[in-house]
Amino acid sequence: MVTFRRKFFLTYLIILLLFVLLLYPFSAGLITQAHEKYLKKQTQRFISSISDAENFEQLLERAKQKEALVFFRVTLIDPENGKILYDSHQEKVASSIDLPEVEEAQAKKTGYAVRYSSLFGQEMAYIALSFDFQGKNYILRSAFPNTQIKELTDDFSLTFLAMGITILIFFSFFSWLAFHYFTRPIKQITQAIRSYE
Image 1 (cartoon, rainbow, N blue to C red):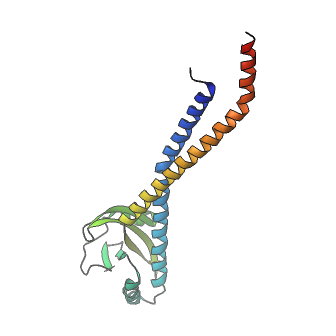
Image 2 (cartoon, one colour; image 1 turned 180 degrees about the horizontal axis):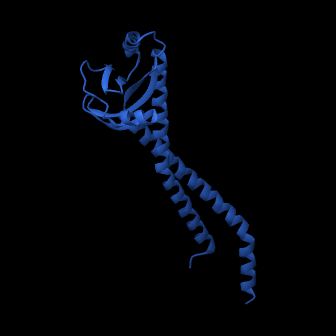
């Protein structure tokens, strides 16, 4: 026969274990959101560092000068005709207007997508931001390697899971001790009554 304490402890353990396991995918989502926010800030910084140019030629020149200081791909797009005005990694490139992050940036001012890049031979995270320069709208698209983010997400998720299980074990053990301590008088009363039967 399973005692009340064991039933309580097993139920408690199962509930906490399910809680930790359900939080596991949530933690990966938090890392992805933080990464997207970081990419957006980096791209906004790049835009602010070039957008105070006096004319369009100077804007392109500043983008070329900043190229050595950034560790990601930068593409400047004219959304009206889909023409790529500047790309930090290719001399001649095709139109990028049909890319999902660019289309999203046209509609919502910001676009984000993760996909394989044949140029870099790996999965890349793309962020596109719409900005205004001298009354004309442009889109700046940045690309970052996504493999590092995947590794970080996996490491964080596994660490989160290990910490959650460790905390679960300690908390369960101390809960069981407290439960054992507080139910001891009830057990003594029950044993005393049984001795008179």
